[in-house]
Image 1 (cartoon, helix red, strand yellow):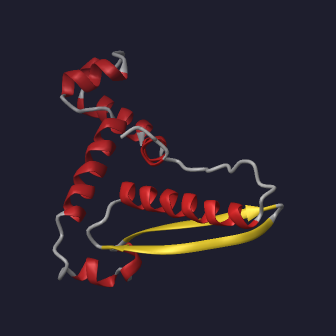
Image 2 (image 1 turned 135 degrees about the vertical axis):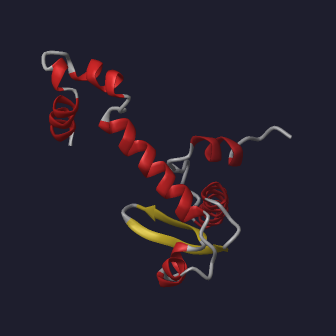
Length: 140
């Protein structure tokens, strides 16, 4: 796309044939293609986000796209010892799912540790540092 835009700029601004592309974009008041694509992507996401639930596009999506949830799994010596899938409904967000998943995992890990007294530590993996800090913060 950058090559096509470059060619188009040279056709529009034929007088400035030897000018660099960045200068041509400024002269022609045309943003670089990567910025224009980001703008279009952002505006499309905003339009999709504003669609009502009765819109045909939203109606075609299955329910899993409309609701948040959490999933967790616990392993001990390469054996799955527990797993959960928790639905949080339509008003929940991704952060809520992270918090609920970590909270459930901590509770299930604690229960499992009471049964197996030789367990000395657990490892929790999450892609949300703020959720981990929030769940495992012991301060009041």
